[in-house]
Length: 344
Image 1 (cartoon, rainbow, N blue to C red):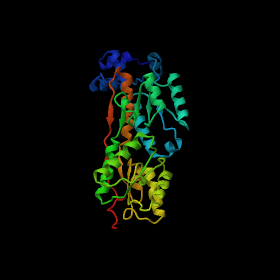
Image 2: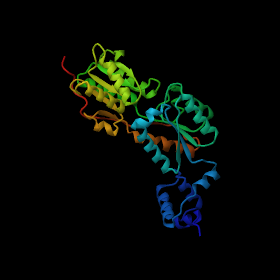
Image 3: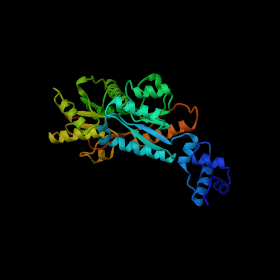
Image 4: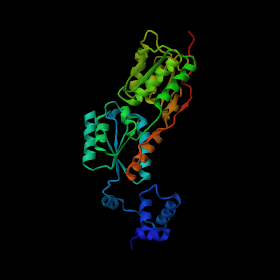
């Protein structure tokens, strides 16, 4: 005979409706009650039929994940695999699944989202990026479709209207630049991602303000943008080394780009850090494995993903859930890629 919710409720000494709320991971149920119900489910070997529950509630139990339209970056940069680990844990804890979409162009990505929404394939969407004049964000906002952004909406009018999970990228870059300045460097290059991304703009502004606070003149020729790939770092550092007076330190906004910088400098027999210092972002696993190991800003990538998933699902469960701005803390991890400025 099949075990039912009523059997679980009887064993746990709660109402059947309480069992349903525990299965849905409702925040209105206490942790003690949740534990008692889950223990009863385990004892009775009761497994909820999530497909039937989804049909009854007209919910897909699926979260759409929109990736940056540059698929090459996604598949090569470990930032994305790590943030997806956090997202996966967040949706799994709440009995949801992930459906990813990406396109070779911005238009392809937009069409993929429209199909998700209008086809009723997902309950909500997570944008794994934030950029200037994003048509997808505009579309979701106009349709009042539930979504969360990993990053900060570029439009200041939307910051208080869209739940988003981010680091304080401005302050992180400012602190990183100040650390380099504290080592005596005043010729500091900036290697960033696409200037259409808000993360790039925030970090660039932090870099600029750190220079200004230390009365170091900004040299626009020291600012290079490229893809978040090893090749992006290689091309950028080659361009910086061609300057009449090359920088003695580099703020690189991604560890994979920084590995490209290290490889190029090593091939050119330029010593790190006695001739050029490097500080990067993300603190990915290979930051520590680089030679020399990279000084890097740890932005807690996995937590970015977990919080995005958890907050979107809460938004789906609680009508009129307030808009939130979740800031994930960062920290500077000092290793051997930074040293004092070379003597003139």
